[in-house]
Image (cartoon, rainbow, N blue to C red):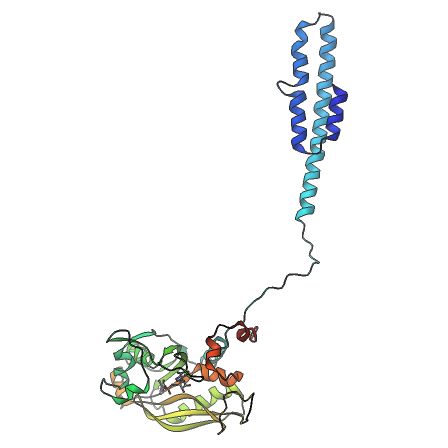
Length: 336
Ligand code: FA5
């Protein structure tokens, strides 16, 4: 029995095999157990001799299986470690990561610029009512200038805001007459526009400052600093007289750009100036509507087109490229 057991233990190559073998020899119905049970049928002289021998064989098999068990366990562990080990010298598999949309990059840079000038960032709702989007901004229902921005209406009363200017009114009303007001408000706006330089969904960054002794010079200085921080110290700005019902006087503001023809000149026009924003001194009626006394305080406001800034900065000719979701666009801005 011992010889056969030794051979089998030797050739057992797994813990399961060894276990089976243990049951066959030492288990309740195993060979040794059966042998020990048959002792009764032996003569009194043979019994102690056979008993001793059977016990010796049993112990030997036990110790051999234990040793083999230790060995197999160790081997199993080693195999597992070997299989699960990581070769840190292997080159990694490249992962396809996207870049930020250029509009996000530009929006953040614009926010940083105004934060550095002491502005606070506030947000307003994209779904507005007529009061904030028009009436409080000096645009009563019958005012022809309502047609300046072709509006997406949701109901008679609610609409998708056509500009970020309603945030001016919301902010002033919340301030309840306190000074100073100095905010910028970035966000999406919506108009029935659709061509290479006009998107139905686009973003503006509204600015509003209200305090005592605010003049047009403060507005011009602020916008010049903004333009130079975004585009470089050599840039100039130009204010052209314009009309907005909520500012008086009003201006459209152009930034100087390098004139060129053919490809690669981005959105720069023939004149060497590109319009990027609308601005002006807050209209007395707007101040009144929002709880401020126009005889005591003044304000300036502006609304910058974020896409326009991004188009100019990166030489993008079609505004729709920003919204196409084409990975080839954002890929160029990885790490930007
Ligand atoms: C306004 O929206 C005014 N609320 C701006 C303003 C604010 C004036 C505060 C005075 C005081 P305007 O419609 O011109 O103005 O739009 C402002 C800027 O948004 C434009 O200069 C342009 O850069 C951008 N813009 C206008 N329409 C679109 C469009 N469809 N797609 C992309 N950009 C646009």
